[in-house]
Image (cartoon, rainbow over all chains, first blue to last red; front, side, top):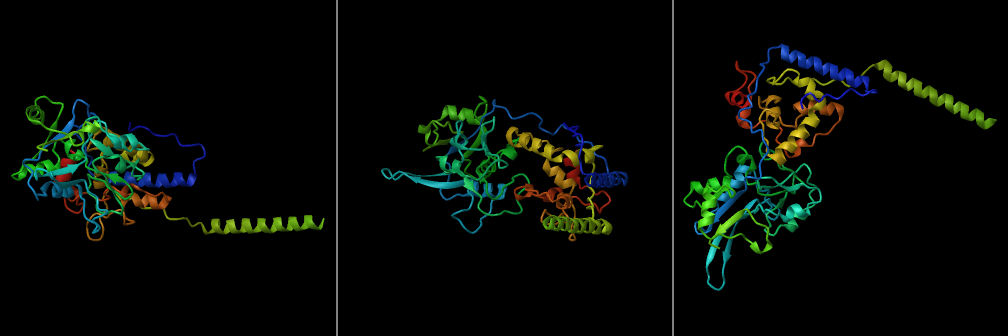
Length: 252
Length: 149
């Protein structure tokens, strides 16, 4: 891969060659002046692609989700570097707390709402450029390199989970590239998952008394989430659409 | 006939202007100064500069697809490692962002007038935990040494 040197073209501009030779010399000097040569160990690197043997998901226990608690939302915003522009109508929103009330029984519940990481995501179906995609392990993402900002996915999503970045951004976090003109949504903290971690919202919720958000592999029969899904009744929001959401709720 | 003479005159005149103008440029011999490429803070392997000089754009696209779609986040070939090693310190001894013409990528890209879109989304300076200090005796901080290892 690294030896992919292109042959210089026949009519290469000689001035360009001179320039390249110049920077080659500069680079040679920098090595000669005693810059340490490092050897990398590949041990910590995850070399294989993600596998469909895994299906990441969450079980959200609304019985434990406290009314008025916003810890998951603030943890998400902090982790992903989402700040307010001072214009709440257009502020990106990867996760939000919603209050639901049954008018007949007056029963009121509070739950976090975000990308449901569907097995058959409508946002992927409608994307004209292939930017909206589902990773093999079930995480639905936007490849912002190919996103043209048409926002068709935002219209297709039944959960209103996606946001559009309307304004220029600066000082983005290194692991979470975000930029104007692209659509974004909950990534299930994919940068943490790839290093063996858990999403920031699940971590924040387990730190407090709530422990309402359980993250895990729905395909692993021994995982805590699979055992709980087996044992207790849980549901997917808008299960009637047959999207097979990866986020399950209990108590709604 | 009169017309032909006029045409020839115009030809000669414009030819003179062209040759003359060209010779002025050549005589001056002035070209835009080639940029000074900032030194990297470490070298990851022999021949890295030569390979990257010609192939960095292809390799970065290859890597970006691997990372975004397949979740392969190898640290060695991460943009984060590029940015950390090629950080250029500003007057305040802190790494400069791509807003500064001193930024590593910009030194070349400004010269060849190729716009870099990467930093509309990506961070153009290392995260605080990976800021290197060339001035100290061990110019690589402990974190970056662990990171690079």
